[in-house]
Image (cartoon, rainbow over all chains, first blue to last red; front, side, top):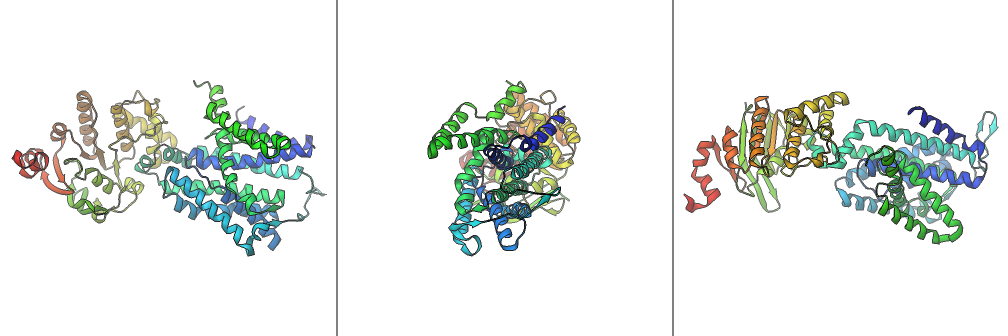
Length: 314
Length: 239
């Protein structure tokens, strides 16, 4: 039963576009799923390994730009670009990790923030590659036929299926991660880094590895962003607020849980979209209020608390 | 050949020479006490041997193999385990998980690691506290757990940094017996300690350092009578 349940949930998720044709609702679903991937990716590093990054927009932006540039310059279909975006994000994370992981705790967090700002400014000013602040635009996506029918890229359904598959893969990866030896080693590192070294764990290598995994998933989501919105500019994909939002989703949902980022993404994305309709920029007030309430009353996150009640611990 | 061979070990912190040209050996099967007044550099020596600090100069060899400058995790894999002066448990994990992690690094298989952890915990007398969160243990038990965690790496040499500090007389007595039992099990032990009565009793040999330099090296009975040691601890007039 415990094994069947996730499979059923996954199939139901993939079946949603068959039953729902409301384009706004599908857009909402797509946004939730994209943020789910980002929250999951951040949670691997920030939750399980305890390394709080404020710079994950870097990998998101690299993924998005990789997808856009490869398509616009080399006509490489965006789905391949997306995968390469993840790979490039992971590759970029290696030097970043090796530098930033020399620092611990808040100093590490600040270093990631600084790196992310550097990358944003590079993207803004390297016009020959990124087209600077004007950004990059894809006017039409390549034609694809599935079972003899051409996919209509003007509708949301195909995007929903793509991002749902990615999110499910990300959840599976996170699940496997938590059961792996690397997952255990990172738990030790989170609890006490010196003690982890003292029992023979190569802490630097473990942290760099999880950062690369996290960056891969983040880059993948960035690539999807490029594919879905068909437009990127530095302020859309490299901004600090993106990095911070990933933190929020993991924290609100529940650190160190697989379902937490899903719950966090549903709550935060829905709140943002609903209040944006009514209050324009004023929606941020409600967003902030919600954050404060969660941190004050549910410090272990919504799903974290639910899990505690469900499993009957205290 | 000695198990551990330290020669000419020096470490500077900026302008301060914390350890200066220190040389000593530890034979297999020994219990060696490393003592000295506060600030003598004892913990620095431990940190140098275990890779938490890099030596400025000098050599450290385990079984003839050069380990100076290796990272801590690599030193552990060579066969040196340690405990910390201020205990460093994995606070939110259970006692068993704490130790099983150390065994997992070595064995790679979870079930085996857990069995190994239970064995190590029984050895230190925590066999009945496997599922308690480490942070709920008393200081004495946390120190025992840290020893079990170090033993789970299957070391040849175990470095104990003030294992007796903060323990009551009863616990001190038990801890001394544990150290002797560990040695009887084939693990060589070096301990830094301030509790003189205990260290003089259980050490086979004592190395005294003062201001980073070795001032005495020999059996406990000789060392306590050494004028240099008395001066270091009590000043010149005590002689």
